[in-house]
Length: 171
Image (cartoon, rainbow, N blue to C red):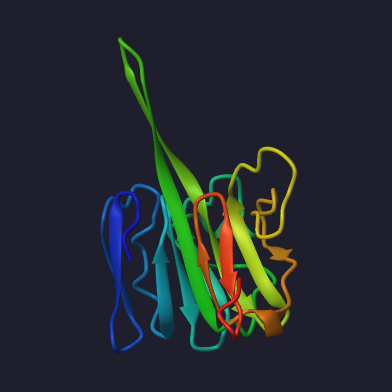
């Protein structure tokens, strides 16, 4: 999985190895030994554990991972995410250019986990305009996206949206 300034790989042993920029602690994955999926985001890394729980390490921006008292270099469980079967994430870089100075910013992005309770998403995602089905909630912390688990067979996360497909392939 490729983040904004770091890359992570899931090893067959369940360990996660990351390399690149670690200023926010996003590569501090040495203690993770039971991963089944990994998502490198802008300044963080999220991992789906064999237990179905999800934890993230690195900068949470405004605290979407729950208790940040542990510091950015310690994986923090994502509150309310249990028995997850899939994990997906996204981030984006925004370029604005004028005649004098380029302005490049990295949006922190978002991640979602599919659980028996439904799709749960977290992260910093601006939500301009009225909410629509599949739009990211304007919450920083874990928030359910109202989609029945029975209606989802797979999903994808974009920097400002979520797409789902059901068992018949209909979104």
